[in-house]
Length: 222
Length: 258
Image (cartoon, rainbow over all chains, first blue to last red; front, side, top):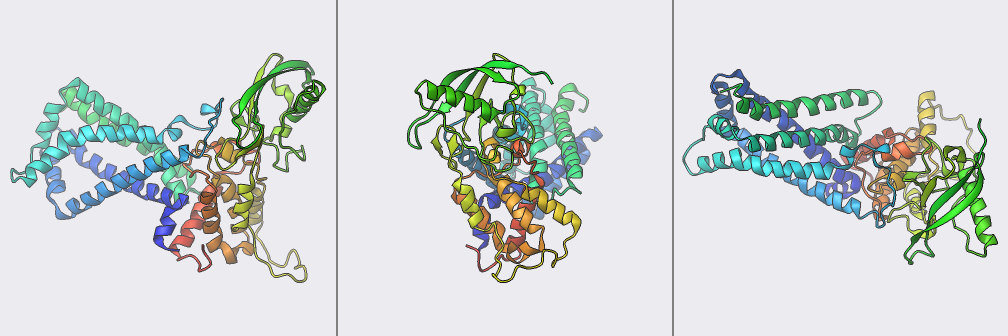
């Protein structure tokens, strides 16, 4: 059987979701580490240095293309799986088990993912888009630190970010463990560790992200 | 234990055949003993319907001792009712109180079409087994049972997976109507024994392809199947099926694959 056939069965599609999801998790770690440099409260010196490297390094810029490809694959495949899976039950139950047999966030991955996507539109439009546009039109890099400081003065904008981080956290609580389960790595020996690390990751990373707009808004960093 | 008798209201799915649209019918049953099983309560209702000259409700059942996998009722939103590790036939009426209303539906999945009332067609499971849930053995003299040494732990694990009775509660409970818990149990009990080893590279792939062809959904690791399985088949079986699948994928599979 060819690679294509292996990847197109129901398990094959889940492997696509798992691998792209794990790549996005790795991206979150790097993104979070770079942006957390603002917490040095040094007027953005350390952050600007890191952001300059990420925005101009050839290898990073190449991986960025892969990141978008994986993100799109994760979104498209996820939505296709959601719609196909829904169609597997023509008549719905009159009474459903609800939360008695499963967790709400496990059943709501498509919804949480869509909320994250809507957040991403706002987020990329505010920072990544203008910066890359400026770079490609020969105007050089923008000062992202100043842009953050200015943008995060608005309550509404900060609220969108906090809401995005909450959606991300719940998406990760299921997604982190699920990606390992799909790869068959959740044996009795490792499942407790994977579960624990997954929940820790789902709380810590979105929390650090959410603290960034809050810190600018509250004036903790300037 | 307290013994009592109760009157109940039942809302049961009635459907003439595969093509007809179904609907809920409401019935009253009186004097149901707390000692009765859920199916015995249905027997009482059916006797009552026959006496009234009405058509009884069709439902699947056979052994009535929790091992055959025939009974299949979705009771108040739960596959096989609210009890843990219990089939419908082993659910007893002491769970309910006088005056309760109970909603009973058939398993709902596109791959399990309703034949009549609460009876669904589960032959899709048989076709998945035919696609690879076996070991090929040349006929001849019966081999000594202990000719192949098997570690106790593997034997126990294989037995735990083999406990699956193929009732389909996993499919009924899954929001995606996925059959992964069933297929993974069937792949697992062979994957853990040396007898299953020669065909392992084609087994998982062929069974998964048949599962897809039958119109079951895909697994999203929600875990409702494990919560509702009357035999306690664990999600670890699904992880093992995923490993078997990846093993076949990464090693190039077998020429016998579909």
